[in-house]
Amino acid sequence: MSEMLNVGQIINTHGVIGAVKVHPLTDNMYRFDYLEDVYIDGKKYYIEEVKYLKDKVVLKLEGINSMNDAEKYKTKYIQITRDQSVELDEDTFFITDLLGCTVVDTQDFEYGKVFEVIQTGSNDVYWVKGNKEILIPVLKEIVLDINVENKKIVIKPAGEWQDED
Image (cartoon, rainbow, N blue to C red; front, side, top):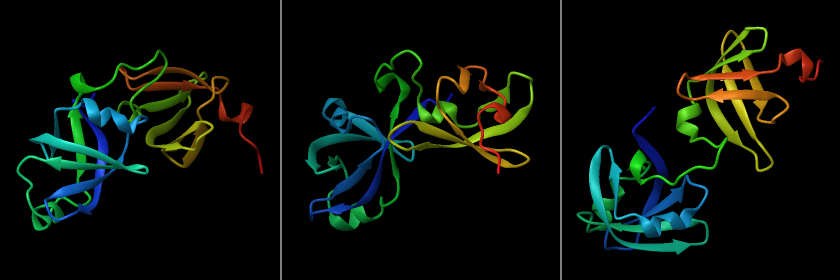
């Protein structure tokens, strides 16, 4: 499991003092209020100020003091260490821990590995790439077991839940 977790992506500069506008990649964007520092490309930056604009976070980070400085960080990810993360509810996982998990069904047929987790609002969908690609709705009646430590997800056989053309 990755020791670093992405909590946001810098999408633009904000103002002339070096603040950055961040698209949050966390269920609760207000969690930035409780962080003292974050990492960008493995380097630690202390948070001097946090503001919120609609669905975006504006961070003023120590050492980034001009719009030109901030411009260099566009598209970079804001990360935290795993010990800074929130405690998850049972049967809830960090997306980074699901990526790369091997998906098999109850008959040991291997579909491939989780390439991406698509968040639809009603339920997540695993985009699995193997010999061919498959989208798997994350529903209790389809996804039977998730073991991130062993990087394995067990599902019902696709023929039991997938629409046939």
